[in-house]
Length: 330
Length: 279
View (cartoon, rainbow over the protein chains, first blue to last red):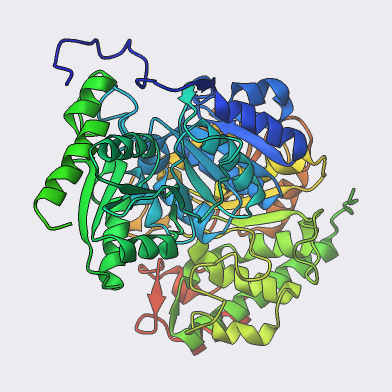
């Protein structure tokens, strides 16, 4: 447990890394996509440097547009470009895309079915910059928009594959964007991202952990620790929150009593809520423990401190699972 | 490249007659529905006629023709005017106008892009100009000569996103983008509730080539659209002062012109008043 005062808020690495990393995987993947598809464009709202899109700008300067600090216009322009046959990839931060430009995404992208891809940096607690920059409720906002595909990738492997997949997909997409030194957790030789497919990364009969985004890494670590203690967990990674792979979740629900949702997002409105909706409507009878950020704005601080304080840790998943199992017969 | 012919007096007269035809359709539609944004529709009838039957190139049989000019109706609730123009232009049968605002009609009270000829879904105000910027950028990347005409309203100038878009259009030197700002002086709560003047100076200061006209004077409209063809690296703004309800005196003078229903209008009388107007 990291205590206040041990780390300095703004000068630590954005994540504690026990994995190999790829630098700016989004930019690398978008350059590859750009080579294959001349209709792919790059747009940003004064956050090119901070959203890893500059490799694309360097490779295709005539296909890159910086619209300044104007997120509504970013999405509006993207919708217009999509209308003329282009596939714009827009980058900004989660908070600005969703809180500022919501109407433009709902109407100009989703209702209008335009082929706009929104890549949103600093998801959940991946910045210590405080409440203005922490996109902790973006998934709730985005998955309530009909027709918008919503993705929270786990790592560099999945992000890079997803960039190709969403370029191939004809429709609006909101995807969280891990940036900078992004860990490689999923094996790029064997893992295959598909929109609308949840992936069972590990199997066990005692508990079903349903996770998304970077918390899948912690879920896998927790499952290993639980296994060392004789508790066997399935880890179902759900990168796409909308449309939800309901079959995969129901299949898991039928095989275990206890479900645990884990996400880098407030516990209301995100993956945990989606699972809760599903198991109630399908009357699966499972118990569900939701792990995520509490419903409150988060302060400024170092990431290890904040993630520890608000429960986005391997240890928290382990202890919550054990407590739940101790309180019931397995 | 399309070659534009010189506008003669004959053409002006024809466009005036088309505007009257559009007004007739609108009144019939509003009468059928018993309500509608008829004031705004009547107000921009002349501009719509000049665009659809003079200035713009399009193929009503092939609405997705890549080389077409685009018309973006940012004020989706002006749809009553757009439906009249699109039907008269041949995008769908004139008889369909009678379904305006009816259950399951594609001619909704606010225009959706699912109807033929509608380039974007307007109505949530402040969206049209930004999308127009994107379209103009895209057309330039494709090296197309097509132009983008965006209609927006004076009330819409209160939306910050309009100015984000205005700033970006001049930054990107989009001279094939033409904003037609319908200044009819009304908005939902009545006469313009927050001062937006001086409108033309604002557009000029944002780097737009700007002209101000009487938006119900066909000669001035045609001349402004003609001068907006100029390729000078600047987007064009036409500030069109219009009169809501234009062509029907009893509606022109109606204080509730933003949204009218049958309790305020005698539709038969309105049609008679329209027919009495000179072309």
